[in-house]
Length: 523
Image (cartoon, rainbow, N blue to C red):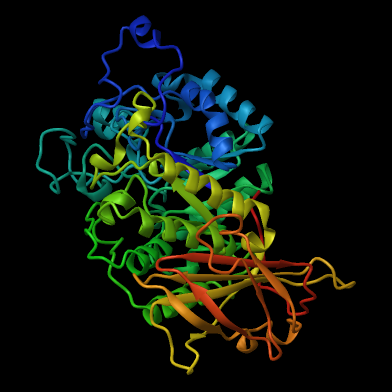
């Protein structure tokens, strides 16, 4: 799969330009400078209208930020877990979106904000109106009455709330009514046609609840995709007792730190959980290996193949901002993303060059109204990158291993990173495939590069004389060598790679007998 994150209020307005005037709503102009409070009129029918664009981009998995009724434009202040916000078009628009996505072979994952409610949720309104007499008294944890849900300093609330923000009262999951309410919501949206959940701040909910949530969701839809917003390497949150995968910010921090190369602008939008630091090739390689190793023994589908690999989102500064506008670095990050295990996620607008620092600058409206501002070369790059991944299953579900890269005299090359992906053959030695991906992050070309495939897990399966085609550069003018041949002993020698170039060599129908890791492609 290739995922695309849609921020509901900012991706696309209603396709009828007269829609806003007919509603009498007061909305900020589409494309105006974003603030922490303004609504700009994004609409689910706008998403429907842009489905052809998304399909042309190579996307087949849509991740929607919350669409529930809410008092906030971002809708992380939910007031009804079962209803679609009328400002987004309500249930009718959601059903039209799901129906069109299904016709186009796309799946839709929705954002579940179940740790807390907004102050406007009926249960909390009852608490504010009735105090200790409210039937929902134990749905929340109150430390002192009266609540004073509005008139107090942040951090001095009289009830538990997310990050001390009184707009976000936290639910008490010790209460059976709360648990039943959220389990019903989880089932409701899968029954409606959604393909899974992205769970917001799940570590603030008792871990035992998520095993019940998983069981409920898998009974409703066995192929439901459950991904948790959990930072760092935390395999305990994945597997048959919890989530299928995590939002893989570890992937993004390493990719940005290595391929960015230049001094990166730091982002503090999520409390330092997404730190970007410059990495050399060995630090990067060890980090990638550690990321995969952390989840190798997880029960169930292997998370390295299911993790949502991202480098920016609505909770971080945009990649181009962090990279100071270096589109070549962004392209290398994206190609790494498209050739690695896991589900690559594109944050809306990155593909046309949207930039911006921390919230709210990272949530600007998609510039449909200003196509002259689009970076068309970058857009075409994204299309080619997704097409590469979609065309070659070995890049989606194949095994992974870093391979050593040295010069002709055997010295390690510190600016070149290479890895292989492979699929094993069937019993008739058919269907195997091998990919060799090589990144040069240096400002200078490298000549006579030797890549040591013989030392890899599949080295003994690669026959001398095996030809591999550079599927990324073939047919263009920048490729230095569109085809390479594996020598006796299983190595590749004499490769030349241009400055800041990526080469993706693939050989199909290779008789590989070494099994890849557990491989699952959510598609």
